[in-house]
Picture (tube, rainbow, N blue to C red):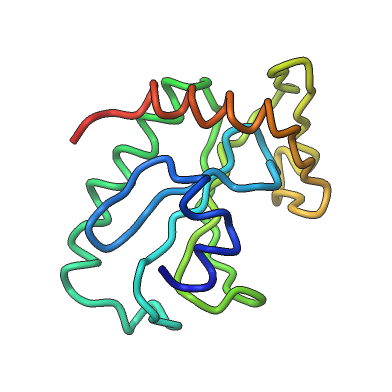
Length: 144
C-alpha cells in the first residue's frame, strides 16, 4: 500500500478492499461516516490511473453511497480530491447532514452545512467509537 493509505490507517481502518482501490474510515470524522477512497498504486495524478482503475469506480461509488445510506441517512454526499498534503490519488468522501448526528454518545456536527465542508473541525472519535463505526459500516456495506 502507498504511504497515503497507511497514513489514513490502512489496514486497521479498511471498510472494503477492491482490486485497484480501497475504502477506509477517515480517522478525523469531518462528518459521521467520513471515508477515504484511495487508489492502491503510487499514482500522484488522477490522469495517471490505469483504465482498469477508472473502470472500477462506478461499482465503488455505488457501494459507497449504498453503504453510507444504510449506515446513516445522509442529505448529500461530497467527493473531495484534495491531494495537497497526501500525494497519492485519493478522495475524501463526506456524507453531509443538515442536522447534528449522535453516535456512541458523541455528537458529530457538519459545521460547513450547507456550504463547503469544514475539515478542520473534524473530531477524532474515541477508539471504541471508531471501532463501532467501522463495524457498523462493514455490516451496512453492500456485497459486490
